[in-house]
Image (cartoon, rainbow, N blue to C red; front, side, top):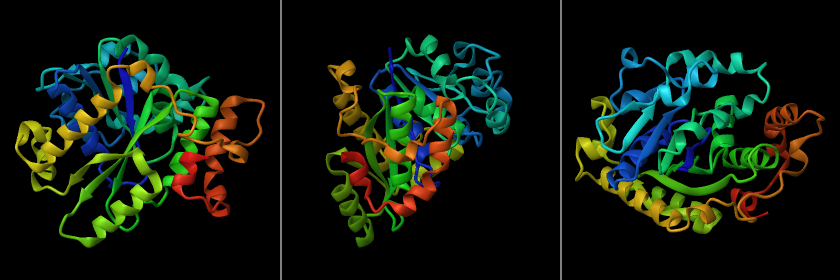
Length: 309
């Protein structure tokens, strides 16, 4: 059964969609069967891989609300070994429709097992929020890949994301781990980028990937042509960076994928008082995530502390 990696960060503009598209394409280039899933209502991942909205018969929206089986929503792409479950603008209303569902955080988790058996990797592009769609992705995933932009506000909100991961582990998915932290949009000309990278490595240590994704014109142009960077210009710096990331992830997960997907006890600490008290597990999770902003004002822990408690 394929490993599910959710690409998540509630901060927008950090390269989540670019990472999801190009990581999936790079894994496919190594002849690992890969499924790319777009769970962002903006559907940028879907258009960025070359699928137009009018081509989509069934999307992840129909999968979540139970209208179709996940296998029926799978579409082939231009790239061998790479399939996709696309998104659609209809997904905007999904969170409202899901709110009254029993076990609403597990809708994606319940739908995926029937299709993930066909793949070595499943890569999920999450929306830039910590709502029900992201929560479903984290519940269905084996691990989380966190893109961090090499800018001044790189660490802003990471504590909140890590706290959400802890809550999900405690209530919904005890096997959820951290795949790694990826530095993106790295500008080698700026000393600031190096300073931010040093700071991130100081906080996260060996959880930071050795690969750094540098700012690259070809990487920015590729989505407008509906192609991953590998198909647009394989020799570009961006394409090579994501190939290096794919090799790093494969190395992390082989030869013993089952052992590597088990969470380390030091990955994410106890969520403690953030979880709140509720007889209903569903309400406990929702309440805990809703209370994170208040907790973050009281806590003085760094993201490193969140990982190593």
